[in-house]
Length: 298
Image 1 (tube, rainbow, N blue to C red):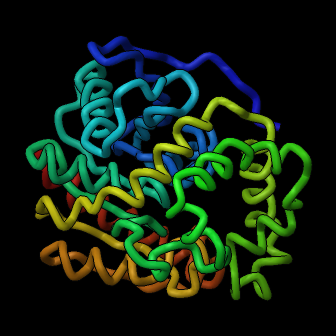
Image 2 (image 1 turned 180 degrees about the horizontal axis):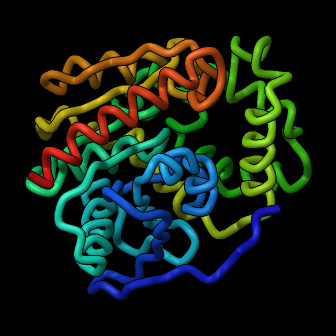
């Protein structure tokens, strides 16, 4: 069960923004996935903290103590994150967008290039869902469901209830996250623990329905890279067998962002922190962050 604890919050002219700060060192602005929390993101990325980085993880609009209100776009999410950075007196950072946090991370890099030393997208959405190939391949029905506003509303409303009822089971959720990699991931203790944490967190926490619903709308509505330019150093970390974020998202981002480096991992599907290339992923990511965050300080 995910424990709810007090987290810092700031007031902005468009409503409060909750945030979490973990670690000390060069700062990383982290856009969490869908549906998730900053606590789960920090637990998932504890290796970054151990490597000497500081994680700044705002709750995106619609999640927990950051109400959605009129903050409906990826630009609104980027602006909320900047308010946190200003509050913390952090001028320049690296941004990471994971899964559903990809679009707001792209928006941040495009909207605030002077504050973005580098960008990492990991198993992230990068293109709007204008065709079924951009939607999770593990749910063949979800693209049709999301295209209809009424069925999308029902799904987002009752998605968390299904988890509370144990539908799907934690093992079924692990299969959905790992896809064809389940053959090697099913017995991976750490991958299973992470999947169980996600499963438990989604099932127990109802304070992210607005965020889930708005993310779904955003995936259908917005394509950041078709309307804005991202020119900072960019690292793309994807598993070509990811059943949640199809590899076409990686290929699209690589084509649209000048000089972007794409690393095709043999990992845990959507759980790129595990599997055969887990160490490679961590090493490439750490070296990339150190290179560009150190350069931004000089």
